[in-house]
Length: 163
Image (tube, rainbow, N blue to C red; front, side, top):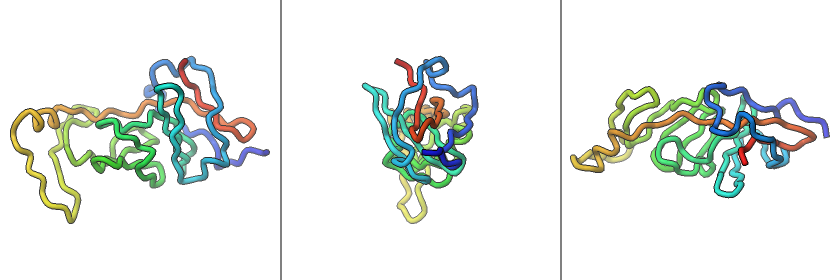
């Protein structure tokens, strides 16, 4: 099979390589045909769950957990390079690693800037009652994605995964 130009690894910020992935061996994880453009899949290796996303910029591999509170992004939604978390409506850019919409619970963005809680349009306002839960929400920092290198070889997606 000839590799389709659409089935290519995506570039990501080098400073955001996942721990242990820089020198990790590549492992075959999925056939390109099993990840059409616009789709996401979870692949697991032991206790490591990886999200593969076939975006408009190429194929990305990141931990399959929201950088906010670890919900599985693979059951969220993908729009271009933006992945939406199914839990708190956070949206994250796979190209940059940054949040594009803070989760409804608010908190600190990756740079430490505070964002208040919010309610999606059409939903009732959520009061942020004082106490430990509110304090925890205010101090929860949304992280940037950490990436695993991807390559496509003979119609197979390979990801550099630490042992």
